[in-house]
Image (cartoon, rainbow, N blue to C red; front, side, top):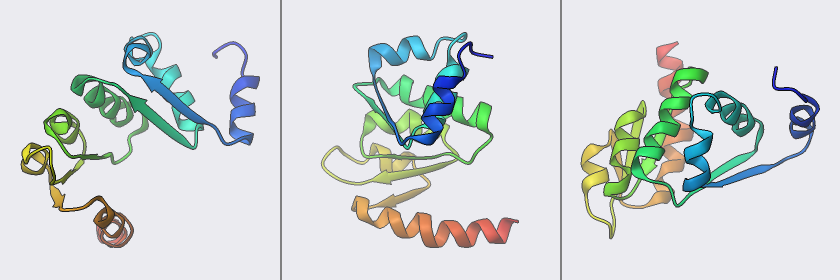
Length: 132
């Protein structure tokens, strides 16, 4: 489908991380490349997008929602994260030094990032089993 599938097979065996900056992400999110980018990202243990615009953050969330049909959480702490939080299924705002915009746009809010673990592992699991 993409030419040399051996690259993808090798990626499944090893544990890779994908690091991409905003300039490169703009090319990866072009219509003819976005599915290939998403497939590659899903093979990685972690994906780090750095120096990206608020619109690119929302586009990445929308890409996952559209092609993977997964519930997408988004965590942010500032005004630059609002579009990503609103695009996701579950928005989480962290209050702090960057203001309250992310908190006001989110479904859940916390004072510190460390409280996110309980939301995901306890409340998320309980909510999942209540819905199924």
